Length: 165
Image 1 (spheres, one colour):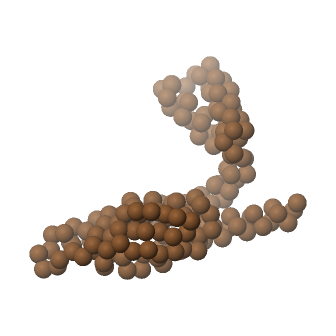
Image 2: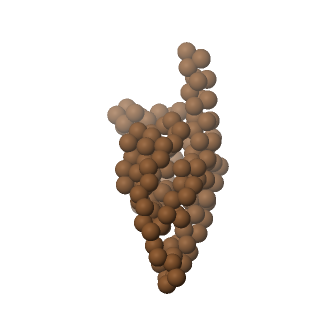
Image 3: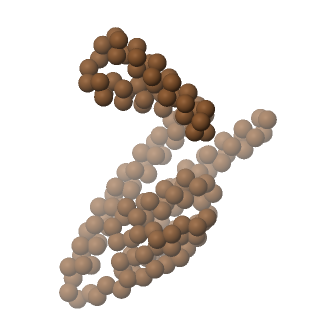
């Protein structure tokens, strides 16, 4: 995170000089200290994110692919005169354990055309689908599978850290 703050400082300044870099090091350090102290962030979080970088990039690739596929499906459904849309609201639960994973799933569902997450309460989702065909398999989608894999590594690291104490 520190390096991201430093890069943002350099980009916003529009040039790179020794003075700008020196100020950037100090300001990025202060901001990093601030988020660690007051926003419950830790260097451990950076390490986890670096370890999970390939999984995160894979998730983003799959999300973009699913958004494109859903766009074509929604256009086909809405332009078809033979097929009448049947909107549906469904409820389902997931086995996702962490709050960030649940929120990421809700946002991914909302970003995918034809579906909107209406509510998320603990592990229960309420999703509005443009058509009942879009609701099929939403509780066991590729998003859920990828997030469960990402969570598995985080939960295992937490158990390892608890065992060290």
